[in-house]
Length: 495
Image (cartoon, rainbow, N blue to C red; front, top):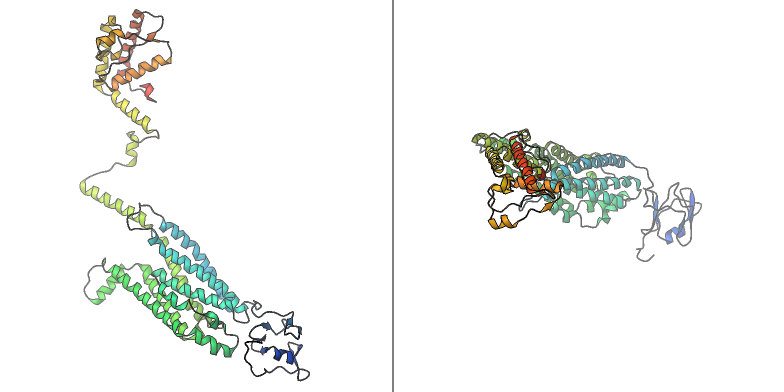
């Protein structure tokens, strides 16, 4: 084939003659195999010419080879044909644990990300949410990597599943450091690279000559140093924040004790775990046998050093999130306590909530109605208003000839208005009583008004004398209503 370098003919299992070989109990023509550059790899029992690869052992052995180099009823090498191994079983368990951690992470994101105070300038709620966002990223990358790692055992020939498993493991490591701080600068050293060399683990010789040098090159060795610098940045930032709040202690030992006392307890657990993440990535960069990039790696080192620290970081964050209140609610509580302390210092005693309800100072829903009711009640209980009403009733009885014995007659009117205005003709309906009620209420609420009142109303067909008698009775009754108990007000028309 074009592009294939000439090489020595491979050795084939002996068959019936020099041009015959037996693979998996099936006879093949050696001349055709050599012509199409096929090689039998007995380590994993595959037939490959660097372009096509087929499984050669039973029950996947092709029954026939055509002269054009095509195998009939063959099985492609890059398929999940093997049963899951230990790496897959452990990965499923750890993946389920990361999946379960997503639930408390989302609950804590809702709890701590909700705002109860108005947003201030240069303050955004996303600042308190970033740790939960990174926890979500850790869980998602771990789930993708672990569940794609199941096919690492099921593929007889190393292929894409191993690359995906390791790719998302590196992303999870960076998220683990970012959970405590931020480690994005490790990204461009590890991720943008040719991952094809890691897949070259299809034989022991190929693993040593191709995969191991690629998995332990200088870029993989630089990445742990950048992670370690990020870890040191976390430590320095924490020290810088705490030193402004702790007491000024003398001596190195006292300062260390004071620092540890002021540091939140979750950081005393999370910072060492973040260092374990850095240490294992450095170990994988120097020792290929303990690296997750190796197909048959040390599973204890891979899961204990590679996945358990990240899982513990998420668990510690979730537990601390349940124990800590929302920041806005905590600020509200602190402000309430400071306000109560200031009131105690000033001698101010606040009434309980039920105090206003007893005094009727709490509205029942209709604010306007409650205000009118309170105003009328205060007016009805005023002794001066009551005396004015009684005086008006007495004056009305003493001057029946004026024809204007209504309670508002004490208001000054010009002679022209009094002489020219004739009483309108109203029928004895609810409209008459409504107008009189409004006029009486206006006289009580606004006794010093300068505008003339409307003329008194009467019934059509009645003479002035009868009207005066009726008006006197109304004036007399109004004095009794003012001196009696306050009326239960439902609207302004009941005044």
